[in-house]
Image (cartoon, rainbow, N blue to C red; front, top):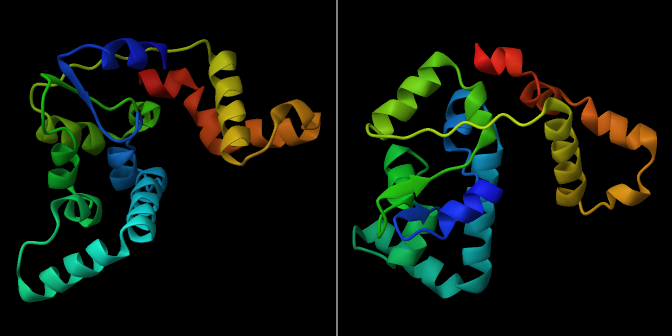
Length: 174
């Protein structure tokens, strides 16, 4: 987060709607975070602009061009969608998804196809600190206060396979 915030302030970078987009994880590891972020954006658009969404759907049926802002949210989640997130000013696009370190070889090849001139910055945190950060994140996302959680509740979250996997750097390095 510290590095993201420093780079986000730079005029040669551009960011997506979220720090972690999880696109390649959803394609290659079956992760649900990317699709969940997209579904939430679609839900917000529908709640805030139902008439614009209705117009977009009508345009889709007739082949006309619908509202661009709605199209950006509702277009299919594919390589064009991913690349389109970063259109605009800035020389470098930023996607800070830690789970990309767990991609299979086909996932890394996919990243190279979408971004031929990429620069990868890989930071490995101390494993225990990484795991504790992930546990805090799970509690926060669930609207729970980790300060009031029991030791058993924290341990149950810490033992989730995804949390354990993110801190097993021997497989990440391989």
